[in-house]
Image (tube, rainbow, N blue to C red; front, side):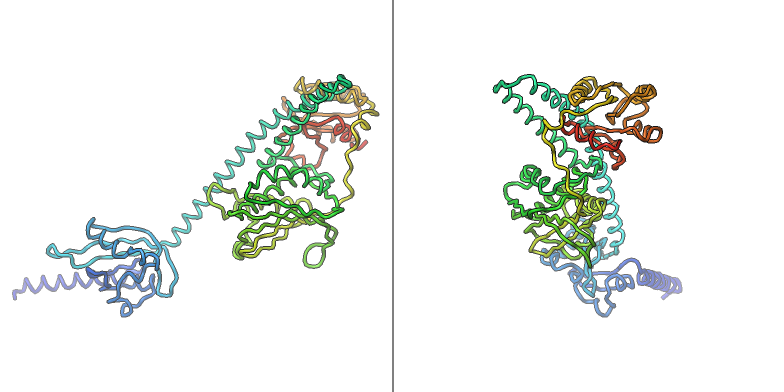
Length: 507
């Protein structure tokens, strides 16, 4: 053999040796060879690190052992080799199994190897990309959460604007009805027509309130609430929300104490709990709403509480999920079926009201979520309408930019015995107040100009702290920040509600 040929053989040997060392030394990739039937014929350190097998444990074994039982049963390993042979390459991502039985998400490439036109085997490259996949899933989840939040915010803004205008219309109708009822006297036919319009108006107001409740755009305005009465008032809404496959039953104990909460937030929490319970029973079942008094202590909370529970006969909550159910945006529902904000609202509402939430759940046996709300003094009973329509005195400054609403409100105030001065914005109100003689300010929150009703109220509280102020709104973003600083009378209101709100003002 010539010296030249010997040198070529040495160079080839050295090249093959270097390539083998390179392949065997790569730790981040499993680089190995298969024979035409799928048996492993070589193994590198990356394969051992990623899949857990030493060379003597895996060489000579079929590569299908890296696949899941389901993939093997479905014929995925031989299909991968066939595709690589017929199309020149096979690429995919999927679950693979390590020697210890744990799973990892793999990026896989299989290339056919030919020699003199004959298939001699396959080159296989596998990379563990579990961390990259998890990061991508978290990013996708964040994008989904952002989209849900933006959708909810857009819904809230839309419903808020509609509700403000709609409640103004209802205010005009309901206020005018009161005047008409006095004018028609004993005409039974006219009275029946008035009652029908009055019922429709109240239904419209209820629907608007529920729309705001679902959109979570109501302001916090705590007041003493009769729990049994409020739950009873929600029956129709809750019944329509659960569907025909679910039975809704109520177990309200006698003499349940009142609580101090925002009515809209309370209704939102109840709706969220009932809808959540409904969704846990895909095949139908029973939802039980109960309420009773409870003197808690020890491991829960101290004091006297009203326990309001929503129990279902659904699938229950897995132990590993139980601790996350109140996290904002956490949901086990399919994409588009839930925002993950329902139970977080329940949790926030309960704690804002000075209470807490308890959860009891067992897989296959259902879930019971209980809101504990502190007991408050007895709720003020609604007085008879005729008993509160007289007795007012003094000058009321009405701040309302809508002329029709202003006319109705003026009529109601005058029927209660007040003298009314009306202005259309906050700036005009401040000028009017400088003239003195004003005993009460009754202002809408939404108004044109640089200052809205809430800004006016805060200015007057700082400059004229003894001047009583009552705010009103069908809905306003500004009302969200009132947080009990000023009383708010929600539109549409009736004359007895207006009378009660004025009577409660500090003098």
